[in-house]
Image (cartoon, rainbow, N blue to C red; front, side):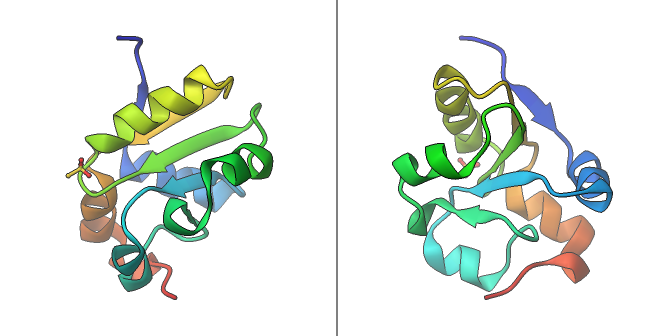
Length: 107
Ligand SMILES: O=S(=O)([O-])[S-]
């Protein structure tokens, strides 16, 4: 299994403060609507082919799930598709929400 980089919610928060970051949220639609990392793109509404076109493969891509487990596999997929800098969000949205609920994006 190739190594997928893990990003902490603090690192992601700092990155988002510094500028735009591609974040892909692979949770279900209702969970996304209830709260998500700011500007995260919902996979539930963005077919994979569209993600491939939307995201620049040379830019950092952070994959977010519920608890940071399935995002590892999804990150591996994007890495295999040629994305240069893919990370899995450690602890997933749950960890993000625990630390930064005031920064949640809502639909
Ligand atoms: O989304 S999860 O696999 O971390 S429960």
